[in-house]
Structures are given as structure tokens and as C-alpha cells.
Image 1 (spheres, rainbow, N blue to C red):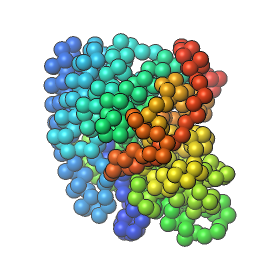
Image 2: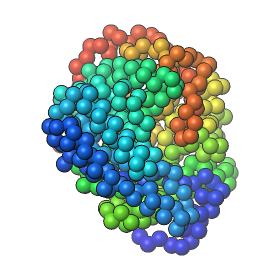
Image 3: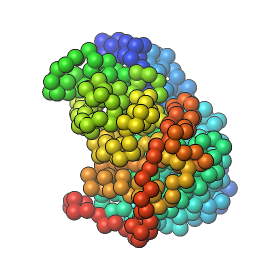
Length: 453
């Protein structure tokens, strides 16, 4: 479908007035050919390949920014799940891989590098176990490395042994990065039904079915949608849905155009456009504000989940009409620390962890950038992860938990990272004991809907 000049002019208006940007152009790089039983050989191969393929990534993205007058907020790289590349190694060697990923990311100038990951929804190899055990040290000794672990899927069920391990890993990561508000946990995601072409961190990785190298783009634009809803006024839901879909159609077209132009400069394939509405802490760039403009008094009010469900559905429908290359997670993100309106709702006591969990049943991902008291027990965190994974498993959708048990902090205090990661109030957690449930271990069986053959 050709791109009209009028589309570009309209999108520039969105950029200047309504906070529209392309959230990320993410280069996916396969590292499968870097595997070797010698850790020095493996790290050297990884470093050389990232430098060879990624050294111009930031420059090419900036060239496209200048050409079209649209900001590309982040330039990132994702790699093959490192547990696969380093399956023969122990925890100390995995940390060395994390350090070389960080070194390469710093030298090519990207914001984050993602893929310090393992896929353990049905079981764990020795390499998977060793990578998981290395995560706290890896994330506490690097700045740009992001980690994700897939612990469940609709096809496999939920690996509760992995869930329990990850709850301990999260606690340990919080402790090791305690001098910086436990920031290591902000770079760590636990997934159910993780996707292979997600361009967003911290959960991105380059899936095993992906090509050698590919360029994926993640769009944004909550401010654009918010402005359109405000201008629409008090129309009924069907007309409101049309307003949202037409707006998302436009920003999807712009996102794909820029992604393809960056891919052309690299001379690599274009992969997908992830049409997710991703907020930032900036005023007017908020999913929460969209829900309020739709009619709820505040995020967390009765009707919030219904409004979010409609928004998410409109985003998906519009994206599918705008592009034949939609992928990633594609929907509306609701990270607390990265959304000014969500932060205010938590501060006022209008938005609880339980209401957020209900909202994740209809949004794009899950419990994202949630700060909780540092003394929250590991079994409680495991229970939160299991609950969220169950929503994903039963509904055949991606869900995730990025939770920060802020070491030494409690309800009424904050974690503050600045920039895109934002500032999050510590949310209260119900401390009813979950240990007798989660410590049963084993695997929660896959649901009936997994039998699709």
C-alpha cells in the first residue's frame, strides 16, 4: 500500500503537538552461530557479530528521523535467547556473556540490548538453570542488558518450578541493585506466551524462528489517541471506536514507513510493526488519561476494564488494516511507573494491584513496572507471577510480570529511575500466605484450549 504525502504531513502534526514518536527500532540478531564450548571464543564471536551488524544502527535511525521529522525515541538490539547460545556454560560464564553484551551495546550507542533470556515453559536444561541463576549478578553488573524468562504457555502450561526460581531471582536482583532503587528488577520480565518478534524491552528477544537479522519497529502515540477522543466529544461507543481506529491506523502507517526506511539503510529484512500504545511519564502521553477521557472518573473506577478492552481491540483492528506486517504484542501497555495518570491513581488509592490484574486480562501485556515493598516474601511474588501467567495461559495471550520489590522501602515511598522507566509509588500487597500452593512445584497442566491440532 503506497504512502501518501498527506499522511506524512498529518503525522508531523502529531509529532509536534501530540507527543507522537516511534518508540523503538529494534534490530534482531541471531547469535546461534556464536555457540562454542570455549567461553572466550563465544564472547568474541558475539561481540564481533553485534559490532558488525549493529554499528550503524543508531546513525541510520537518526538519518530517518531527520528525513521525516519524526522522533525515534529508542534504538535497540535483541538477540537469540542467551540460554540457547550458552547452553554448555555455568553461571559465571553466563555473566561474562552479559558483560560482553553490555560492552557491545555501549559501543554501538543503543539504549538497551535484550535477550538475556530462557524459554522454560515445559522444562529446563542445565543451561537454562545456569542462566537463571546468573541473572542477579548479570543485571547488577551491567547497565544496558535486559532479561526475560518465559515460564508458561497455553500449549505447555505453567512451569511452577521456574516460577518459584524467578521469585527468588527477583528478590536477589532487588538486593544486589538496592543502591539504585532495585533497578535490576526493572530490566527483568517473567512471561507467559512470550512472542519471538517483540521490539519492546525488557522482554525482547530474537526468536529461534526469526531470520539471521531483522528490523522490527514499536510505535507509540497515546497522546494522539487522547487528543482524538477529546475532540470527538460525547459520541456513543461505536462512533468512539471508529475515532480510535482511524487514529491508530495513521500512526501505524507512519511507524511502518520509518521502520522500513531504517531496514533499507541496513539492507536487511523488515520484520513487523508492533502497534502497541506505549505511554511515557510525560504529561499527555498516558494510557490512563485515555481511559479518563473515555469517561471513567479515574483509573481503577468501575468500567476501567471495559474501557481498556475496547481501546485494546481498536488498536489491534486498526493495526491489522494499516499493515500486513503486524506482530509483537500489539495493544495497550499499562506500566505504572511509565504513565503519569496511572501513578496518580495509585497515589490516590484508586488503583490497586488486584484491579491492575483484572485489567491485564484485556490489555497488551500484564503487570508492568509494579513497585512493591522490599520485604514482600518470595512465595507471594511467585503467587503474583502464577496468577498473571494463568490469565495468559487460559486466554491464549501474552502476559508478563515486571515487579520491583524495592529493597528497604515500603508503602508510601517511591522508586525513581528518571527517563523512560519513570517513578513508581510502592503499592500494598496482600500478604496472605501462598507458599503451600506455589511450593507444590511441578507444572500446572496446559488447558483444554491447547488441543488445537
